[in-house]
Image 1 (cartoon, helix red, strand yellow):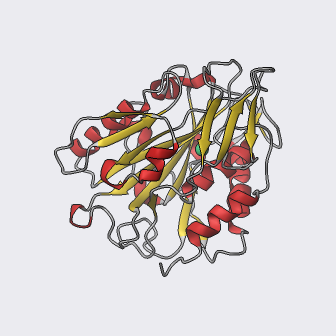
Image 2: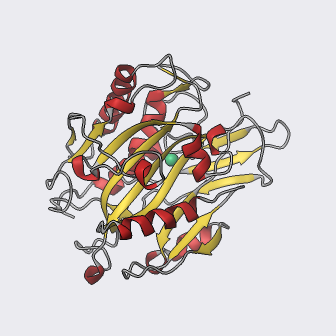
Length: 328
Ligand SMILES: [Zn+2]
């Protein structure tokens, strides 16, 4: 039943910085959220697919961040999908060609967890068990292998440093959405925040617990004086990213799809952690109802099968994003 795949892509972008190419290249429906009293620009929520209400969730999260006096705002949610039933009305489900996200880490950013030229990550060991059969130790090892795969791309001189889980609550998305406490999001740049129950994914998307494998939330620093871009690279300054996995689906180690392979999904989400967006066409063939991915990439918006190695577009995107680091 899991051969069919489904993709819904939504991004929240700052309207004034949204590239015209993105507007022209896709037919996602724009909606506008409420203005923000702090001077953060209005949202342009761009979504495609059925039942997507994540834009409203992100607006709510930012209202809570403002109330908590956090100097960050959530800027996007990128999720990876798979579905056992065909909800798509359109032949072309997704066609992603913008490899880079519109927000990126700033080297040596003193506001950031590492305040250095490396990118740090942390695996929340307390929330690391997936279903009854996959232990936290197994998922952490799979995530470490995925990070190591990105670290091995030869064109980039980027240190990706693992930080230990001290037991402190390292994330805030669950708390902002009422599924836990608001922790300290500055313990690491990228936090693999663990496996969340069905209700968490249903809060993001109608029925999301049935087809969303995982999601990465990106946050940026507020700095109105520079349009939230202190180094002038044309990208909003990433503060931290949090990755959540769906415990309503079945997971495995060295698996394929259903159970879903932890390393494959961690490889995809770590790509988002390293500022890469979705790539490739996801096309539904009416004849067999299947979704097909072209070209096959780790960063496809839908998961087809186990994939432990980066494909050509994945490596090219990574090199494009990071080639000048830390001097660009
Ligand atoms: Zn994704």
